[in-house]
Length: 163
Image (cartoon, rainbow, N blue to C red; front, side, top):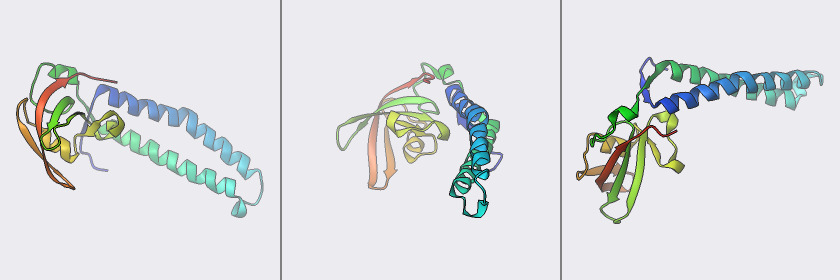
């Protein structure tokens, strides 16, 4: 991983810190106990429980390392400070009109760790977000998508830190 900083909201940082705390205080001790129980079953070469627990431990330790690195490089941005601004930037909640289908769509531009398509929270690094950054209400943004270019009119821009 590089030393590059990446943007996140205060709630995004808290989410990372909560996951890290859970992994360190709950998952790590639980998997250690599982390994000890499996080890007590004898021959480790043919012990599937032991190998599965060791693999799970590796995933947990890798995730802990990743979270520590992300937290150390997080550039926490207080989105509420942008309230009232109409230019799309990190943290913006936007309402768009798809000019081809005439359907309205809403997105929130967040950090990579916070992205959640079910909530319609998209990463600042996604093609849609990159196409929207710097646009204002009334502007038309052309987004490069796998199906070809799509045009969206920016209907509204708002900023609030949503957990």
